[in-house]
Amino acid sequence: MSSDPDPTQRLCVLFAGALELDHVTPDTDFFLAGGHSLSALTLAVAVEDAFGVRVRVRDIFDAATPALLAARLDGVGPTTTEPADVAPLVPRQRDAEPLPGTEVADATRWLWLERQRGDGNSGAYTVPCLLDGAGPVDVDRLAGALAAVARRHPALRTVFVEAQGAPRAVVTDRVPPFEVVDLRARHLNAGRFDALVNERVEAPFDPSTGPLARTTLFLCPGGQWSLLLVADHLVCDGRSLEILAAEAVEAYADPVSGVVQEPAGEPRKVPPADRATDPRAALDHWRHLLLPAPAPLPLPVRGPRTRPVGGTTATAVEEIGPDVLERLTHLGRRHHAGPFAPLAAAVARTLAGVTGSTDICLGTAVDRRARLGKEKEVGFHVATVPLRLEVRDSMSAEDLVRQVARRTMDAVDHSEVAFDALVAALDPPRSPGRMPFFDVWAALYPRIDTGPCPPGGIALSGGPVPVRVGMFELSFQFVEHARGMRLVLQYDTLRYAADTAERMVRRLGEELTHLLHDPAEPAPEPAPTERTFSGFHFDA
Image (cartoon, rainbow, N blue to C red):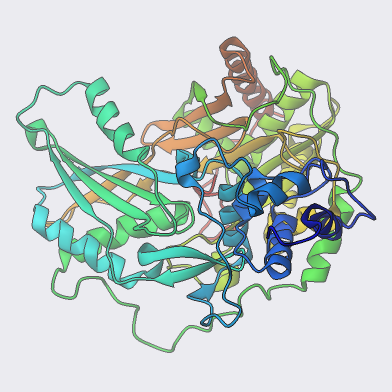
């Protein structure tokens, strides 16, 4: 590198190419100039080819100008705030061995890139679930059941290595660790138990070494027990947690065969991955919906967005009773949707009231398993999508819920475009500290319940565990439980005051009441046997 006559100018040319600009200066910040995770990957590969050294995407995030990157390539520039995490740049072997592992799906690549941009050790990328157990539990038998489930699902044994600036998936033969915490002889209060759970939830995963999942069995006084499932989002989503719970119960009931196998009969036809629709048609759909891009919402933040989002969060909580949940579910069903449609409609109305905007764009996630033919597979099979809604005072509840339902169905139909590819193609205006297209996240987390406890077996029921860090500055999380639903508004404490979040939660409760009384809802009907859309899973 030191023999290069003018490395900074060479990097300026490469930066300009990745940004699709005529030229840049040595102090041009790649991301302030319009760069994003996908173009950072392009730049990392270009720099690697030009200079013959391994360049990580994280190097672009940490040294975001040509001058800073030139200094890093020369070995004298600043690294990160945590130097121990920075891998040294080393000469690349141009006749290297074939790339390890396999390519990953676009959505997985985007999530991996987001980890490189932010704090990869943050619990924001962790998917935790706490399940209450029923039935006497045999520790060794449960450990064997969980190991059998891990052997069936390669995602639970996968790690991710970086090759030419991109992630590659490598399946290992290691099953996730199983820990037993015996609390039966202790005086245990709720606070102490929560602390033990949080300690395990917040322990970071390393995608390059794994394992990327772990399980803890808590043996509590009085014969009670709980099972904590924690996984990295790269290998797990909400539906995966339901699959894991159900298969663990099945494998425990039948320890000889381990896990119930696929039913006998004709093999199921699996649709080709990501070919449900023409990607060009999907991009045309998003271009028509999202351009011109929605303006950032004038949210009531208490300071400038100068730091990465979600580093420290708190929650404001509101209970939604079973009668209200039943009526919301009925309202959604009338529009071939689940309860998410009216819940998201209430979030949109809340944001419209707080900001005065009629153009509300929410972020959420859709489950792509049906499109991919992976309905029974553990893994990360979701896509981040924007839901752009028009919210006006004159709109009836029916019109708004119908709009949300249609937008969500369209999002499912056009979800094969990864979010970073969508941003790259549409190139919306960007500002530091904000997500492109949306500021606010909304998701529904269904309750997990494996059913009645069989004789000699076990049963599991429960749901997600709130984490203390997040990927978004505002996240409306609707968590189903045995007695109804809980709204958990997670907010970045550096951007929002506690009383602001509390007011938003109260206002959302009022908007739910307005939805259910405008017009007056008829009595709920029996649930249909099939629904086109049943709501989102634990995908945030």
